[in-house]
Image 1: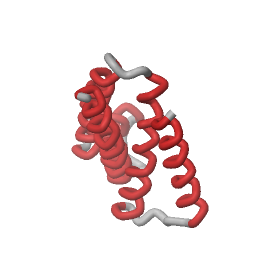
Image 2: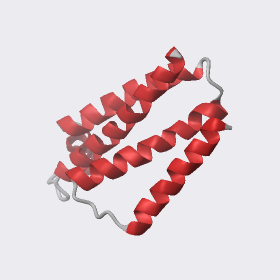
Image 3: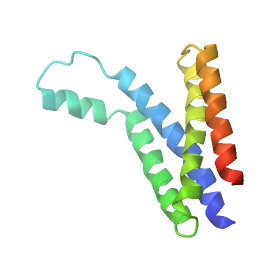
Length: 119
C-alpha cells in the first residue's frame, strides 16, 4: 500500500513541476543580450524553473520508491494522471483553451488507465 502512496504523490508533483517549468520559460525574455550561454543561464536559474526541477526530482524519487514493489506495467499507466492534472492547471493558470476534442482525449486516457488498473 505504501508503494501506491509513493506513486500517487509522484504523479501530481511531476505535473506541478511541469507547470512551474512552463511558467518559468514564459518569464525568460525571448531576446536576452549577451551570449547563448548567458541566455541559458538566465533561463535555467529563474525561481519557477528551479522550483519545477526540484519538484520533478522529488517526483522521480517517489516514483523509484514505488517501483520497488509495483510492476512497471501496472505503475506506468498512472503517469497518464499527470496529463489530466496538467490540462486542468494549464486551463486555469495559463488560460489555455479547453476544447471538446481535448476533453474527449482526456476521457479516453482516463478510461484507458481505468481499464489497465482493473485488469
